[in-house]
Structures are given as structure tokens and as C-alpha cells.
Image (tube, rainbow, N blue to C red; front, side):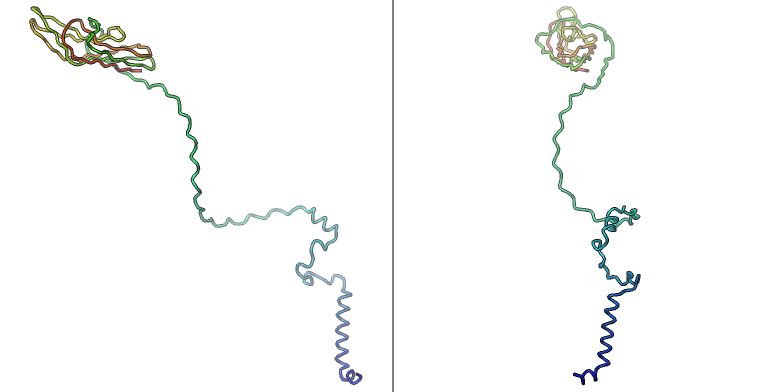
Amino acid sequence: MLAYLRRHHIGLLALFIALGGTSYAAAKLPKNSVGSSQIRSGAVTQSKLQKSLQSKLAKAAPGPAGAPGAQGPKGDTGAQGPQGVQGVAGAKGDKGDPGPTSAGVGGINLTVNPVGTPAPSLSDASVTLSQAGKVLVLVQGTAAVTCGASPCSRVIGAALDGTKVQGLAQTINGAANATTTDTIAAVGLVSGVVAGTHTAEITTNGAGTNDLRVVAVALG
């Protein structure tokens, strides 16, 4: 053993000094000798700090917000979503009033009242006004008159609700001992007609064949 120490005394002495120096450095560090470079990253956590310092950190106000970053690139368009359920149909609106209409009749004898009475062999025409307005009455077709030894005449006209339509009158003039047929195209306009259903009919003051039609048009 002594022989081993004699041969290795220098190496053993160096080892002893090295170990002793390390222990000294770890046990007695100079004041303010440890800096951030000597502390391993993550070695100091909040739980290792003093309680008072931990309390101050917990109550500390957050710092001011940083400036916003640059806007990122626009993302890809997403897939189209499914079609929504069809909504419930709305309630049907109220029917509006009919729009204004107008008509006029020109010519001669517009104020003449046709003579005669309704022809029972001819049907009438009905028309309904939803509001007060006018009724246009038209009689057309053919009619005939047969005369004896002297010339004669026959008047074709119309009435609305039993009242003669002014201006709607056409006279057929016949020769003696002959039957005369004439084309009828007579029209009249009745103003101030109240709302409701009204009847137009053909009138005549004498006998004779008829192929006539009556038309009534409501003008609200």
C-alpha cells in the first residue's frame, strides 16, 4: 500500500485538491456572482418565488396591447351550405278596386229617346258594376219592316232597367207594299249607373222580323 502511495502521490494529491475546490465553490459562492447565464432555462418557476412576490405578480395589471399584426391571406371559399327550408306562403291580399275606365259615343241624335217597348221575342243582357259607373249598350244585327199601301217605318232601340237609352235609336224606312230589311248598329252610353246588376233589352215600336243582339259593357 505504501509502495502504491509513493508511486501515485502526486496524482492523488491533485485529485484531492480538485475535489476540495469544487466543494468550496458549491458551498460558498461570492455575492452577486450568479447571473442569468448561470441559471438553467426553466429552473426558476413562480412557485419557487417568495410569497410576497407571487402576490405582486398575481395583482399586476396586464401590459398594453401590442400593435395588430398584418392581415393574413384570404382563405379558400368554403363549400356551399344546404338549401334552406321553403318559407310559409303569405296570406292572400285583398282584391283591389277596379281601375278607372272611360268611354264615349259621338254622332247625331245622341239625346233621342227611342220609341217602342221591349221586344218579347228577344232575350236581354245582364251586366254587373262593382262600383258606380257607366254602362255602354250596343244593339246590332238586322231587322225588317213590312208596309201596306203606304210607306211605313220601324224604330229599333234599347232600354236599361226599363229606362230608354238616349241616342240608341235606328229607324228602318220601308216602301209601300214591300218588306224592307236594314242592318242595325246602334250604340248608347248610360251614365250615373249605381253599383249592382242591370238589365239591357231591345225595344221596338212595330212588328217585323228580327235578327238582333244586345251587348252591355260595364264601365266602373
